[in-house]
Length: 571
Image (cartoon, rainbow, N blue to C red; front, side, top):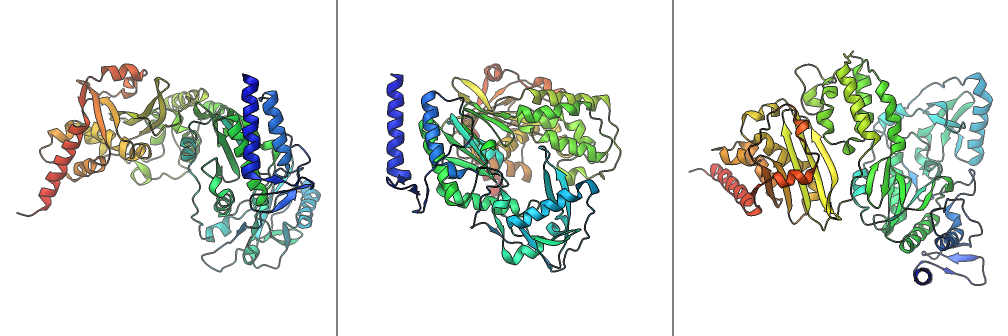
């Protein structure tokens, strides 16, 4: 039976190739691509790891990769050329950036000079007579090779921003549900495969001890290079993007439900890569995998998690003792990148965030908190160190977050206390509730007084979680269930006259269709709110015996809105 399945898969593979993707010229060493262009038949096999495949799968993969080998660079000198990628630079004034050159350390002098000569011989840079000059610096890469870097900071300050959006990582992750096979494609020296638009080339001039040069190819460090490259990649992939693959700058992820489907999709993407002159670096590509690392996450058919190889570096933070506000800010930025994988991150980390703001201004956001200068000294205590160690330990074994299934109902759990708001989005998959997303935040000074009003804090948690944090998941959901302590609508029902804030909250919730189940008689004012967070969501759900159904929620909302409209009508 297994041999029959493999035979049928191969027949499907061959029929699709013949019918849709390309036709090999029987008596020629060329093939015809989708756009009618021709190129030479593949004659070598890119060096990629196929050890996870069965022998038959490996044979089919090698056949396809040999045929599409020209999508890959043969060596480090085989760089792609994307003629359609010509980046323009627009400035907000015409005052030239004029910096002097930075001296090259004597031990590196000869090597750096040879490096610049190599760039000229490749045609990536050329001699310049520009009035602009940015300084050059040299750094060593991990593999020991030299990289030439240009300090474009002054030029970037004058550059008008390109508003081409870069995809949100979470949006990419949420689109991967239902797939079991993945391939990641990476381009070598990606930016250098595109060009600086000729009228803009003089702006990229950099100064060295040997003269002035300007870039022909796109260098690293320009403000709008990521936006230009993202736009180019989306245009090159065209209809394939977000259908069979996603692209984040030069990192492409191809996905599929079955091996056969994935094989066909990967061929399509490789052909599109060739059509536009791009070259992939085989050593950095991972093909035909059921688990891949992509954008700092590990992706499988079960979901996604923080990449342990990245979070391992966080272990060193246990020994960290920040001395200044700037040190704390960098530390929180590093850990905060993985906040989606830590339940109640904001509330756990609140004492650390408090170090960033002056006393009495511990609000929400930069305006509410105020901004202490980066060099301000902080008092780092044992309590702060315990929090860092706790957060790092949680990331050492990050949870696997499920991919959302938009045709299945969602479950929301909300929690509120004077320490902040917390929420978790769940979905029942394969018979059990799985976490889709965590959310948490601290309270502003005004919100810290909400506990004085019955149910107002719980209502804020309800409104915030549904209309802000989980809106993208819940807005188009036919209906969903909310579980919480106490009835979050108590604030609405007990207020004889809602103020403008309450009326606005009710209006924002009116577009969502949900019912509420809550655990009665619970005191939400205790300070140790984190200890109340249910570790077993199923048990918590069983304890939520009281319900406000969908019709009742909508009726309450309609009554509040009618009251608000009545107040606006004179007489």
